[in-house]
Length: 414
Image 1 (tube, rainbow, N blue to C red):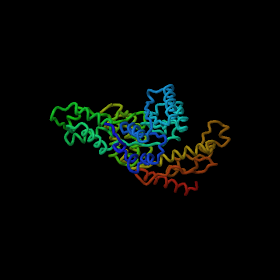
Image 2 (tube, rainbow, N blue to C red):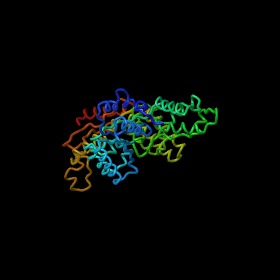
Image 3 (cartoon, helix red, strand yellow):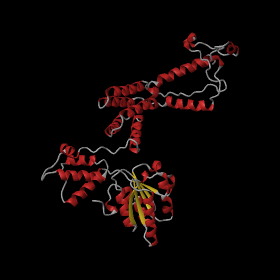
Image 4 (cartoon, rainbow, N blue to C red):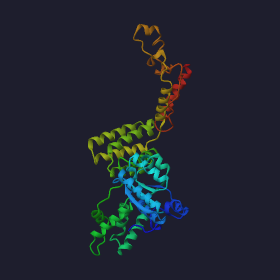
């Protein structure tokens, strides 16, 4: 059921449409080496095979999982032999990111001298997984997860080839498309299971479909990019005060088997970074959710995490404390050797008293308004303002307090 021409490939119009990137390369007559980056089941292998046919190159496919240095040398030698007879080679390397750095470097000479046109396929971000030298010699083409119309196109082609419709009602068919999770290969595998299970004239509904094929888990590798993409999306939706979108990403992460305590820790981080003192209760609730999950476990404890997520996403936002802390760290690095005013230092010895330690210190609780306004900064540095509360949430009150103390300090000449 693989497409027989590039025009048949579904869901990659940005690459293979009339003005697609690959279409333009083919028209130019200069393909060059490429990296195909995208989720499984989006057509990377198929497109590579069709490109070889389109450009009249010999198609050679290897997998980084099963290929070592000796096998690579043999492949390169065979490509050199073809080149001597006037035949070029398109070398397709599946899972190219699994080659180590030295193995990736071995491709450089044969790419540069034209022995092979390399197409490497990877599900991982090339920026992180591939050598800079390799990336500089290849153009990255991004394959997208198939949308619902593209999956429908694949299923319709399968039905045409089989000469029969899928035995599904309308709702069940829509559910099947969603179950594919953007993976064309998975959609065809699911279709095969349905045809195999159906009795003559039987039509499945949603519930029967789920029972037959079970539910295919979303594609998600906790150690790789899918993990970082979703936690990034979760954090940004919370920062953007969209609790509904945040719950959606939370559910996806739970569904994919993410560690709930990892998510709980991230929500604590969101509470201190993005809410801060605009709502000090956010940190309390985020920590309480972590403790509740520790106490209840899954699945009951997941609700506590969801509740904290809603609270933090709905809270007024301020990164003033976060920015103030970063500014303080920078200041400490630049002026970390300056001595504090002697007036605020203890004088446990006679010599230190003679040197002026503690001299002139004013005990704030004995001052009017419990505020002395004295200088606490190193004399050589002078007073600095690092924390700038926003006019949102509880920080409005903090702004009033700081302004009041600044007024008293000015009145008292400090």
